[in-house]
Length: 182
Image 1 (tube, rainbow, N blue to C red):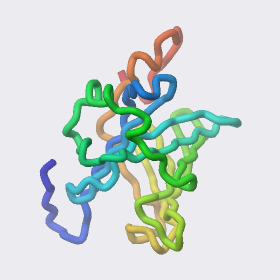
Image 2: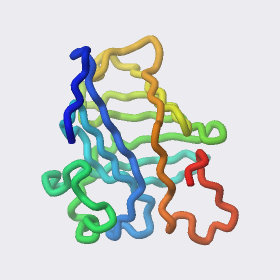
Image 3: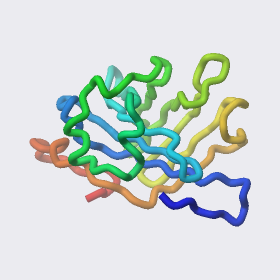
Image 4: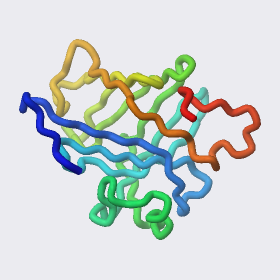
């Protein structure tokens, strides 16, 4: 990954990718791969298990790779390289690192996001998140976050969308992809 130079050095370049992957060690789970880098340095690489609970509340349970050097950002083929990864190659994060969100409108979700790579007073720093097909807004409600707290949420626009993997929608006769992602 190339480092992007900014005219204003006080801004960090944050790149994040969250995509669905087939993980043979967890064949009955919905699994996402989360990659995040800050200034071209890999900050977070996790497997995230998605589950739907009562009242339409979704939980995302992140798991770290026990050997993160084996998997570097954008350098592996997610269709092949996970074939030899077992559940023993993953370690669950702390229980308070689980993310929760719920749908509030068509393609609009709200939730909480604990940053478990940034622990203050023994607990992760928490963010409030709202996201839709085109936008994500993140509100920092801790003075001890990595970013500077703002009176308004940080807002990001999504530029690229990816379709769901075919195995997710197999058997669903009337499935319409979210966000017109074909």
